[in-house]
Image (cartoon, rainbow, N blue to C red):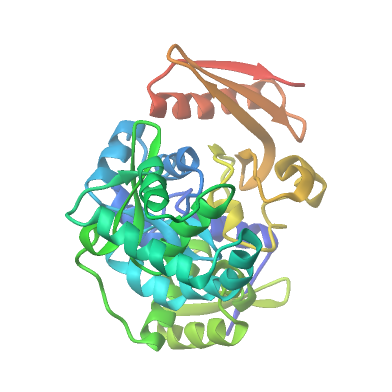
Length: 369
């Protein structure tokens, strides 16, 4: 019999799936474990990606997380939707082959807009492959200089497109920053232990990871997260069926990890702060469980894909925040979206204090209202 969930119960399960509340079957203690759990975590903004990990690893600092990335517990590349994600190194190649290549469909049109040819793009891949050979890494500026030295233009958005293209082709990946500079390395050298999966096996694995890290979710949500066709999304979910269960939320069938199917997490009045680019919101197309539509404009001003960092109470967005980091402190400006009394504001500052501890800086607070 399919279990019927209220929206509140579904949100409680979803917060558990997202590792924002204690999970009954797993408690990852390192970067590798968190990234493995999700399979992919959005991280086009590095600072957001670091705090996405830190928020799920209590007690670890930004230095700890950066050290884990240097140890190659995870790497960044463009596995799906043309967006940078953190992924397990061993899974990067099959993910690129399964979902990353779908973003190549529009590459020819984009190249034409930029005044690049397919020959230019392929030459860029060869140039970067040669420049990075030997296990080292180059900064973004050094990669672009190598392309220009080979006679390939990098002005405007050409350079970004060529760096993206080389990574989606599975030749390069984004390595940890050197200081504030983004770096690139060869995927084969940075992640030599690559898994090789047949297509159906890859679809099933990706489906299970998405559901266990985000559920309850629908097939359409899985298709939206991966950029797969709805047909392939359903095929993956069917292949992973032994690991999943079905629940109903307001009458709609949704998939949830079998380990959570019979659990009923107690409602929690928790207060957490998350970066803008976090799976909490970006892992879904329908965000109504977590975000009041009336607050959409405050979280995504201009509806331009740039998400503000959020204050989350009991799974619902109740505010947004911005940070300004100096050597002396981190100043956080908080804009409530609902009424927060003095006690609730103190809890928000406590949650933001944990973020300041993550950075190793004292916090300062500025409330807009």
